[in-house]
Image 1: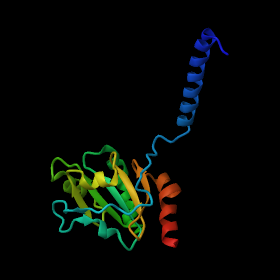
Image 2 (image 1 turned 60 degrees about the vertical axis):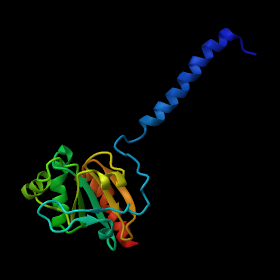
Image 3 (image 1 turned 90 degrees about the horizontal axis):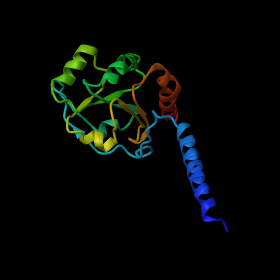
Image 4 (image 1 turned 45 degrees about the horizontal axis):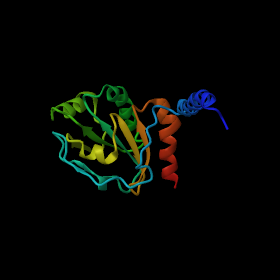
Length: 181
């Protein structure tokens, strides 16, 4: 048996080693990857009204029949400004339809004014001032983009802005694979 004095030395060392292993494992993870429980699940049902100046809103049924992106954005979002020119490029090149959710705008004119000023890359845009759709998608911040397959199943979640590197290395290959299936 171990003496009490010796046990007092071994317990802190054991606790330190357990914490060291825990932190070592954590350091190997990408802090930008926030897992989503919705991966491989159907898009949650939602029905958003249009943003001001648009005739039609956006709902979960609009995503059926084609591989598409769902982008959560806001005019208040600095990272969305960084991402926006690349979304415009995706639209101009006709790579994949992008649907937008204008999230948490305090001023209902801000989102439409922002799109009028910077361009509108979205096939349809829904207004989500009370975060109903964002909560259903499990959104933690903007921008977030989901790849949805033709059956309306979420296949990937991108947290943060889409950059050319992220598009070429991760998102575009997923879109192409889903189209090939």
